Structures are given as structure tokens and as C-alpha cells.
Image (tube, rainbow, N blue to C red; front, side, top):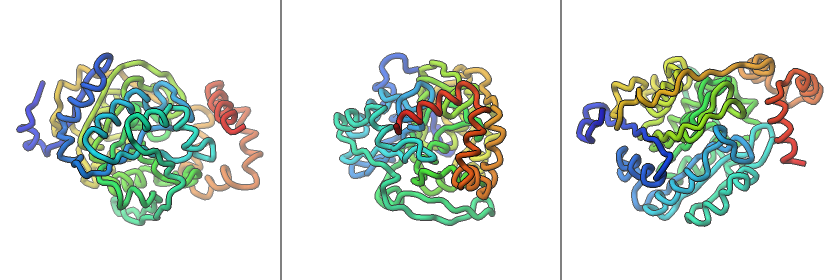
Length: 344
């Protein structure tokens, strides 16, 4: 069913655009942005920050944001505003630098051609922010740039599952704004921290890259499936909820999405959204994450800051990592070996 913009006001003005993108990517991007009323959010004098998902030092289908999508999006944004910034933090646990991921995704050329800036968020001054999410006290670290010098945050994630958080979409992608490369030490209460980051940064536009989708594990390996889907929304909770439903995952069962909804950041029910087409025709089946032995063991540092410190940043870390090497699957070894080669 197609809805007109007038009907949007009757449904909280939460809009979502879905389209296939096998052809005419740039025109469909622009059409989607127009549908969600992007010009109301991106003024001529706005500074726009674009956050892709570069969770690997080179482009991997279904793992990182498609460079061609970013190229088209930056061209559109720069056609309206004078300043567009693309940013990412260093890879977790000192695995690679943001500069290496920029190089591996061809972002220097893409940003040069579009007239956009590239920044490593881990190299910028940052601030700690303390607040409460559903009565739980939470502390997060964010670059000062994003707190006072940006008018519009655009999150550009990949449509994929995540073995620890169920999905990695618009909100989870914002975890990459946490500048500490050892942010793996701060996973305790991650759902609450993600909801707080979303509440602080208030992404006005979500562009979910479904060129390739990721099934079976995530976020750094799994089964990549070409789907040529594009999802654009003016609300991060709605974007993540609908993307989750397309993968057969109930958004109410995803902790950070549910908390963000409870904080009043958006809605999870498609009936409360204005969608350009019947979203059910875009369903992709039932995606899932299969936990490995390492994943099951990782639940301990994921729920305890002390355990995370002992395992990942202590004198016994090399010993524990050596033992873990015997437990890794072939895919886990492949990812680890490739990351090690980056820093040789």
C-alpha cells in the first residue's frame, strides 16, 4: 500500500521508504530521501555527519557498508549542504585503524570527488556523558564533534544479524562512534548504552544498506546474501524495527531497539509508520545467529567489565587468546588472520 505525505501526520510522522536497488541507485536514494522529507532535516547551512559501518579494514559484502551506496549518498548530500563529514572509529581491540578502513573502502577518493571530509573519531577530543535509561545509570564516551558541531547524523548500516545483539542496524552502528578502540571493555549493559547514544545523537536519517545482507552469525562473518534492498527512514527505531522484521526477527526481542522505543525515540509497530509500499513483500525469510564456542565464552566479558578487563587487557590475555585459538572455527580463524595481516 502506498501512503501520501499528508497521512504521515496522522501516524506520528514516522516514515519509511523501501525499494529494490539493482538499477538506478542514486535516483532511488534521492526518491527515498524525498519521501521521508529530508530537506526538513538537512538545511542549506547544516553540517551533516555520515556514519557508515566499517567494522572491517576492507569492504566485505554483507559486513561493511557498500562504497557505491556511500558515493551516491554523499553526492546527494553535498548537492544541498556545504559540509559533510564521514567518520568512523578505530577497530575494536586495536585490530585496525579508521584510516586503514577508509583506505580499504576507497573513501579517500569517494570523499575527494564528493567534497566530503573524512575523520577518525578516535583521534578527536571526546566527552563522557552520564544519564539514565529506564532508571539504569549509564555512562558513554562520544566525540565532542558530534555533540556540538553537527546538525544531522545519518547512520548508514548494513542489514545484518549480530551474534550478541541479534541485529546490527542503525542504532548498533552508532556504537562505532564510541572512540575508544578498547570499547570491547565496555560491553556491560550495552543495550542501555546503545539506547543512550541514540538518544544523544538523535540520528535524523537512517539509510540501511541491504545490497548484501548477512545471515547466520554477524557482525564480521556469516552468510552474505545479495538482496539489493534499500531502507530509508526519518526514525532510527522504525528503521531498525522494520529491517529486523524483514529478516524474520521480532524487534521487541532486540534489547536496544525495545529500550529506545521505551525512551520515546520511535516505534516498533509498522502500523504506526507510513511506509511507501507493503513491507511484507520484502520479507527475506528467517535470519539467525549461530553461536560458536567462542561466542558462548564471550558472554562472560559481555556482561562483566571486570571479566572483560581480565580477558582482553591484562597480563593473562596472551595466554587466554592462545587457548582460544584452539577453539575457533575456520571462519573465526580467517577473520583473525586477516586482521593480523593488516598490522604486520
